[in-house]
Length: 304
Image 1 (spheres, rainbow, N blue to C red):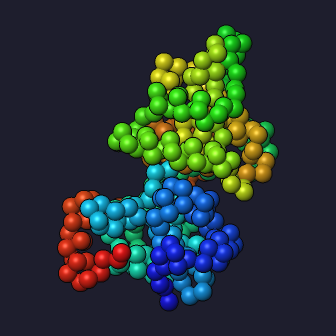
Image 2 (cartoon, one colour):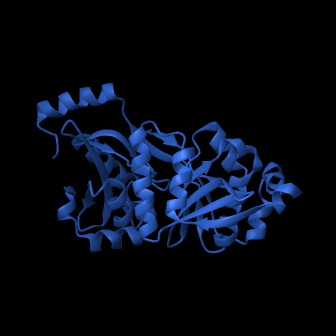
Image 3 (spheres, rainbow, N blue to C red):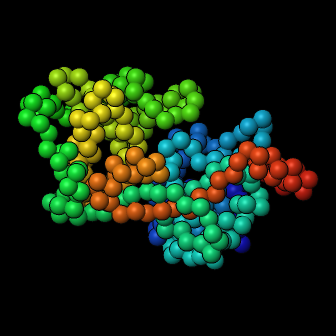
């Protein structure tokens, strides 16, 4: 039996235990990560006594509750001891029948009988760094061999949130709305304060040219953001920063690239020779949401 629980009804001890012991474990489904990225606006769907769980983040638009994965939260989905298509289908059916869905992203382990759209992600699994590096593409290896002048006048430093904030504000791209930048910065600041997040910067002649934000959780290092000064985009500072984090962590941690749907980004990530890990998504247009709302309203199915 699947039921819906509001935030204040969740037994977080049981939820966390289910998540941590699941085959699909993802840092992005943890209470801490969801509390920060959704401002505690998430329900869960739960089967029986927390045998399987599915976090459901939402927003309100004109007082209407709409399911939407929050900014920088790539994958959620169903979490259980063993991934099972029939179980996943039941959760998908419950979600679709009881919620208005703008965008919901499952995890790469979740399998379905239904044909769902997919998005791309890339992972590097733990191993000896020398062997991981040996698999990099020839182009990526060339990029990492910095010119003598660049090598002599550059360095990598870990920087504070305040330093990172200034660079992000001047160089962020790809966000649709101005307030998305504010949301991103607030989220990154909170994770930094909680000591989950690290900012690494590439300096050239004492000036930051590239920066990455990485999130650490148990066995995963996730790339939550890459920021570049366009003037130095060809200098390979971003590649150098990512390679450094991989070098420091790959023996014990998965490196999660957190994306790869844009052709240019996919090409960049593929240079590190990670494994492609597609994940299922449910996305609906505004037009479809309006139609679904009318249908739900007629049946009294809108959940508060």
